[in-house]
Amino acid sequence: MAGSKDTPAASQNTQQALDLEKVTDYVEEKELDTEKVQKAMSFVMSTEKQENLEEQKQRAQELAAVKINEEDVELIVNELDVPRPSAELTLREHKGDVIAALRAIIAN
Image 1 (cartoon, rainbow, N blue to C red):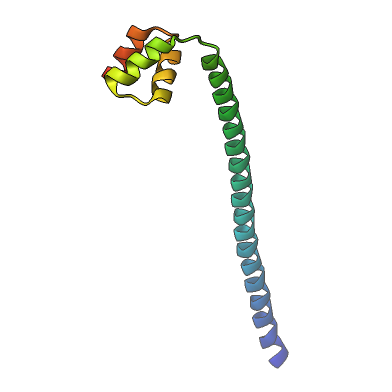
Image 2 (image 1 turned 45 degrees about the vertical axis):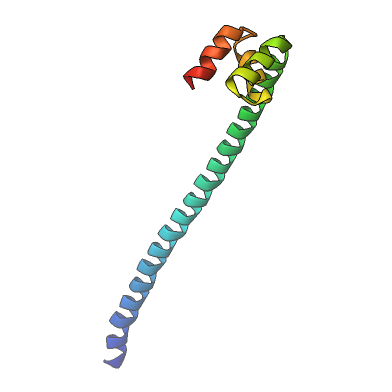
């Protein structure tokens, strides 16, 4: 009879061990899914950063190609007390149009 009492207890222990294994597997799968998501997000973020850098380089090249008058730069720097790089950038963004550049600087 002692053997028959151990059998249900052993069976119950086995079932509990299996249940615990299922929970552990579920948690491990969740952790793996989280790692996959983090890796995917890192890849997406790095791709976006590269695209942004390429766009910024292209924009800088486009702006560098715009011809601006030195007198217009001096006007903006002296009259509006704007740093030279900002004055040049604003003029280039407005394709050398000093009036549009002045309006943009005043509006900001």
